[in-house]
Image (cartoon, rainbow, N blue to C red; front, side, top):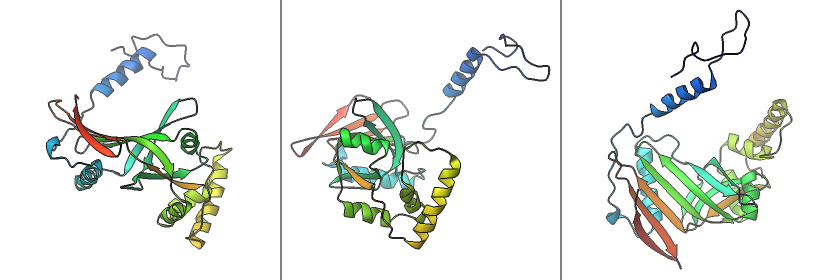
Length: 242
């Protein structure tokens, strides 16, 4: 690996330290990257032949086991969408529920994800629970829940979450942080005064899965991948090579 002394540096003042070269920084980053451990814990087993006929009960079971294993924020997930031109985007959001209708999450209709789903109502979800070396991937069409569902969802959230929803304007350009502070303070005051306040753009989305995959990591890299695929309302299970 190159060192600061090995790499040429631009002229600097007498008391200014020289910056490491690009190749040196890159080498240090790669070494740091490759030194990271994966699943430095005992992993549970998974017998796919014992999995239920539908994916939802297995998801609920794995979620409960992730909570019991101490997994941090197991209810967060990656949400992937695409814009009107098909360009993908991904972000981390919170799961608001999972039932026979599908996997539920919420956002503002004017947000980037909201605009994406309006033009291309199809999405993918990704859960990663490293405490047990597990992943769950969900794909399918997305629909908008009725307004009363969004109001109930907002009413069940914390004061801070309500205040954030009342601020709105998600993904819009912000002129200054001071403007955010002022608007947020006003929203917090309103949320405390009106715990049942509504945010017109707050929307609950429901992803109805046509594919759900369960991934169980294995220390010997013999990972188990069980995929559920739905055709004409019927689920079919199949194993995938890792």
